[in-house]
Length: 228
Ligand SMILES: Nc1ncnc2c1ncn2[C@@H]1O[C@H](COP(=O)(O)OP(=O)(O)OP(=O)(O)O)[C@@H](O)[C@H]1O
Image (spheres, rainbow, N blue to C red):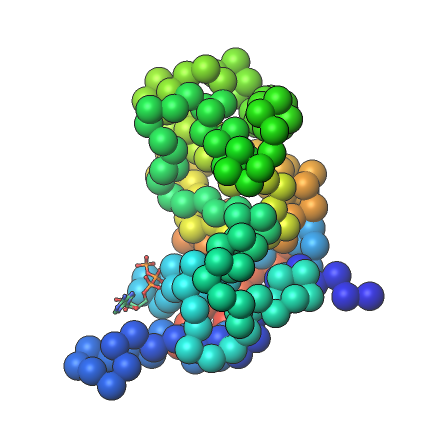
């Protein structure tokens, strides 16, 4: 049985190819993420983790190699198909929440669903359920500025999961929070990953958090290696 949700094969990426300042960031990245598996990615600064997450999340194209989601090679698809696949199958979480400031917490989670054609009532029900599961339901009608940093990030998790993606990609998702809040918010994220059966690739500098995931990989020298 093939339960690999996300497969990265032989990814390479060079910026400014053949020009001054050329930088070969990825030199053959391979990774299999199974359904329900959370993998921590640690990397020195500038090693290319954002580049890798963007390629895995279909925001950018590799020079060579393939990205497979659910057994389908999606890297060769055109822009429109890749955008549609990204909206359906991939959720992103960043260090800073990037919530839309003029919309409430609830609206921030319903909007991506409406964009995907989900009816209003179903979108609201899903949003409320997610907010409830991360303990922020009572703040549903607040705008981001009226929420604490930890609450904002919990709402950002809900938004990332709004369309029930198969893959979650996160770049330092608790990096902007104090250690105690970071710990609690990370637990919430892991609970969502488990409950939703997601495949999660989570970049973090925090080795304690990394150790709480299923396994750890290090991005260095343009390749991913397992960390024992
Ligand atoms: N568009 C670009 N053009 C040229 N060089 C780039 C471009 N984007 C990134 N780079 C370079 O590629 C390397 C990897 O960048 P990337 O942002 O992927 O690293 P990172 O591991 O996410 O870094 P950090 O941990 O500091 O955020 C860096 O040396 C960066 O300067």
